[in-house]
Image 1 (cartoon, helix red, strand yellow):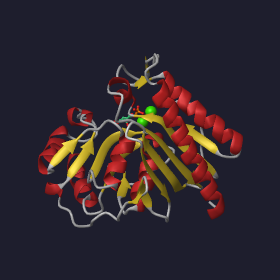
Image 2 (cartoon, rainbow, N blue to C red):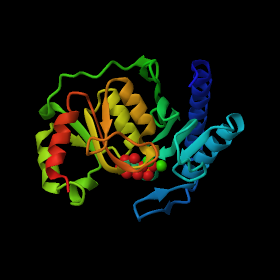
Image 3 (cartoon, protein in one colour):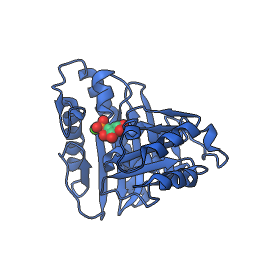
Image 4 (cartoon, rainbow, N blue to C red):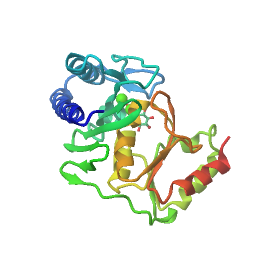
Amino acid sequence: MEIHHRDTVYQDAKKWVYEAGKIIKEQMNNPLNIETKSNANDLVTILDKQTEKFFVEKIKDKYPDHQIIGEEGYGDQPKELDGTIWVIDPIDGTMNFVHQKKFFAISVGILHNGVGEIGLIYDVMNDTLYHVKKGEGAFRDSQQLPLLSRNKQLNEAIVGMNYFWLCENRLVDYQVMQGFIRTVRGARTYGSAALELAYIADGTLDGYLSMRLSPWDVAAGIILLQEVGGIVSNIDGNEWDPLKKSSILASNPALHKTILDIIKKGRK
Ligand code: IPD
Ligand code: CA
Ligand code: CA
């Protein structure tokens, strides 16, 4: 993406993320019209839909040639990565949003010809914005995040994961997963993949593991994390594909190979 143009897109994206967050906060105590999607725990509310529509309208109005991949389906369904693509999760952590009214984020990743250029993750209730322009540093609000340490052992690592995968015996043997959990210092489930990736970027977590995530869950987080030297792949060590659902193993650079080797032992 041409550098001057990228700044304009970044400024717009940031403005719209803050505006969308303000609307969510103002309206979150109104009836949410909660519905379920793929299963009883897969929730969607009127604000997930409304927020995605808000972005789609703004983007299509100002950047009609840009494409959008959004969780709620108001965007496009690009088959190729050509041009500029906004990958948007209007509310990541909807279960938290519905039940806890906190620990959710707006996640916006912007790719140009397949390269992650801009990432924004807005923790709405904490009013904290993680943001990155590739090559210009990753930030939490005004604070630049340092490069991640290459000096970390697994037994002193705190790893985020969806606890659900500890009970699932499909992709990775659950006993191997349990062994992994016993090896690390601590495991956490925050319930927002976008925030969990941001937490690796700022050192709150050292790794994050999930067996099936969609592009909108992780696009912004991957761009952010890679800027500080974090490593992201699927659980087989292959590169992330922005057009597909996949497993995700993201971590501090010191731990990625070690975790990958453990998972390999239990891979089905
Ligand atoms: C979910 C969250 C959650 C992850 C799920 C995602 P949603 O996104 O990121 O942490 O474990 O797999 O679907 O549905 O709240 O946008
Ligand atoms: Ca999500
Ligand atoms: Ca969502």
